[in-house]
Image (cartoon, rainbow, N blue to C red):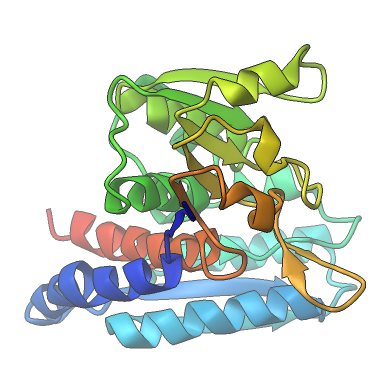
Length: 284
């Protein structure tokens, strides 16, 4: 039996129409327009494509989105001054810095220079610390989108055994925390995990974010599981694939995200929702 495909594209569109637009209209009734600024350094094609997706979703939700482009030779100090300008502008509710950054700019220093009340990517130390403590904060966009995908698929998180492959600061660690908050039993795996295949076979919910194409094969999966594939890679034939071998996995899993059209759109819609949340916080 072939798995149900969890369409992040469809779920994101539904969330924009049913949840985000009404909140934006309520803010506009108070003369508040949620405003997002994206910092983009250089000309990276993948980043440019991702930014276009963000702008499209912003328009659909009714918020304002502005891209501020900078040359690759901008100094770190000048870049930090641009962030400070954003921090002082009360009309701007959210700011994100598109990565990768040039090697001479320290991404950690940049992220932690952003006012936490405008850190709609949820990457600064304050946001991460509050997430760890279970306090209200901006949740990292990809992990937040993953939880939405799992819930929208009808998968029960509470009491499930969730296995996360990958321990990055922007996906693996925060999605594990969010799954814990939803009362899953969570195992985090990484390159040093022994008997990885055995861990995968125990997963009711499997989140794969390792950055290796087709790393997980269908034969490794627990029959009937839900698979969330975070990876995206361009193959030699030009086609995209994820960290999971979709063709073999869909024959074993009950539910699975496609690549593309799975996690990506949910990351974008989560960013838009965080920006709206920031605007709402200003009215409290």
